[in-house]
Length: 84
Image (cartoon, helix red, strand yellow):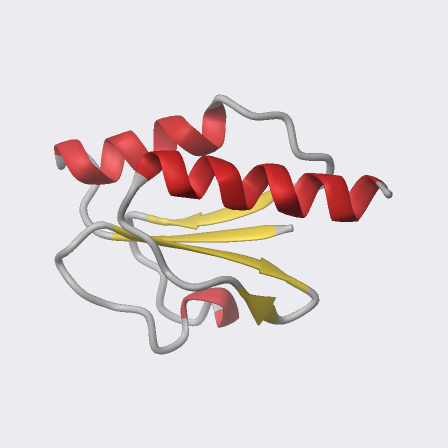
């Protein structure tokens, strides 16, 4: 499971998304974003100032979300699929 976070570290919306990711245990989770992400394939084409998250599995991503609660739901779903 991979999570891409777009936005600026320190921005309340970005930090809320990052906290949502940190609050769940997802085996083998890879997360990127919030800094110099040039050259990171998961971040290709994902830019902007508005905090947005993308949850991906095997190169297929859920709909982007800006809602930490929805992000939590997507991670829970991805975790269940990964462990099942």
